[in-house]
Length: 339
Length: 183
Ligand SMILES: Cc1cc2nc3c(=O)[nH]c(=O)nc-3n(C[C@H](O)[C@H](O)[C@H](O)COP(=O)(O)OP(=O)(O)OC[C@H]3O[C@@H](n4cnc5c(N)ncnc54)[C@H](O)[C@@H]3O)c2cc1C
Ligand code: SF4
Ligand code: FES
Ligand code: FES
Image 1: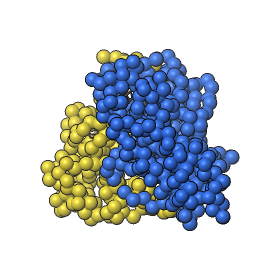
Image 2 (image 1 turned 90 degrees about the horizontal axis):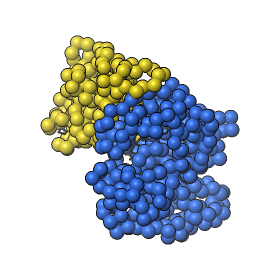
Image 3 (image 1 turned 90 degrees about the vertical axis):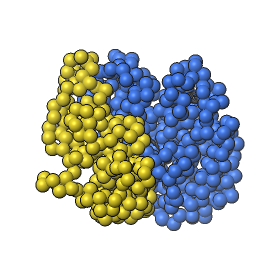
Image 4 (image 1 turned 45 degrees about the horizontal axis):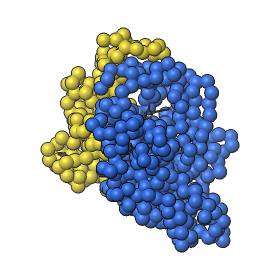
């Protein structure tokens, strides 16, 4: 590992200034991804700006009924928070489906959003990788890519984004707050992560010198029936092969009033199923309708040689979760998880 | 060698002074920023109970408690822990040297073969008991359970909550029994 300087930031401004002054600097949250990548030589920061003790560690209700989650709230605390469990069960479930108890105790909201892909070639300095070193090629496209993207990939990169949490945020219409020490802005969670296109080295829309300061969960999706379901190679402590986050509100007569549907592990970003949502809105909340809408969404899939299994897997997960939400009796609309 | 770093100043050096309280004893160490907690425990403090299995957060053998929470010590840079309280498997015994009830249960149940994963399993289980008591749900907790109340730990809960601790010897059934003995 390359030697590096260390700064424990006391304020967002101090952190942003340090990032701006040192192009080789990186924010440090819980370190569960960054330290791993530094050990592998993938990340070689000259300065670590420790943001983990910034006063951004609370979950609070705002006057308009939305809920603001600070960037340094740990994944385990967020998953356990009563406001999240009561109003946004899909978020709690997604967090709990990720990593391990130890990792969730360290991982932060900001770091989870900004975690890098688990593409094994990205982590292996001996392989070409356009995301790690632009212009070198992509070892996955014709190589090992069973876990890779089926939607929205490019000639340059076929990696997926590994976060479970981000999939729930996309389905909930959450917003990501950014701060560069002078100005703040926010983006829909769904548009925070990018498709790879010609610039796979850029995972997100964050600008150099900007920090994630928090995430806002909107009042509009609070307390709607919602659930997360994840398929993986083992029952726990494994990344998703495919996952789905769904938020569904139906009227008394069984018409879809609101639907938010996002897939994980299918693309370079949480894949918001906008076509399926449009097809469902105002129509019947039946298994048939869910299946038709989800299949329509997945028509855009372009599987690689060895990951075609993801398309039916994602279809079945989504139809199952939506059907369960439509038939759930209780207000929070939780589904039973089988693992 | 770089200058020691003070909070709030530009840190250009590569070393810092760090104070850690480990198993009740404070230590002030001059550390290269690259050092992770696991290596400091094992190499500087001679506490070799915490094990290095993978060094990448994938096995749990290095699990220790920092400010009462279980974490992977192989991924925690020691410089970030200034002022923290660390407990390792060596620090779980009570003042009189009696083993922690979980340590006793692992012995009684013969919950290991080679023993390499055991310190991590035990520290992790200590964390699990505290998390369940504090009402933290897991992936297998019924989402309809009311928040804020302790979660009852059955075998499925124990398995899920300890999934971050791998055991290459496959002692899992007895590990679950040992944890069940103390709840
Ligand atoms: C074995 C293993 C299994 C895992 N399994 C899963 C899984 O199943 N599902 C899942 O979703 N995740 C999984 N993870 C990943 C884990 O969720 C992430 O490592 C974690 O969320 C990252 O958070 P952190 O705070 O530790 O980030 P760090 O490692 O500190 O940082 C990650 C990135 O975010 C940047 N960053 C951190 N905070 C900010 C901020 N406030 N503003 C701007 N940039 C910031 C850093 O510069 C860095 O680039 C797993 C990890 C491991 C090691
Ligand atoms: S898929 Fe993306 S991350 Fe993986 S090798 Fe190709 S360019 Fe790199
Ligand atoms: S050594 Fe830390 S998780 Fe394996
Ligand atoms: S007892 Fe050998 S690895 Fe668990």
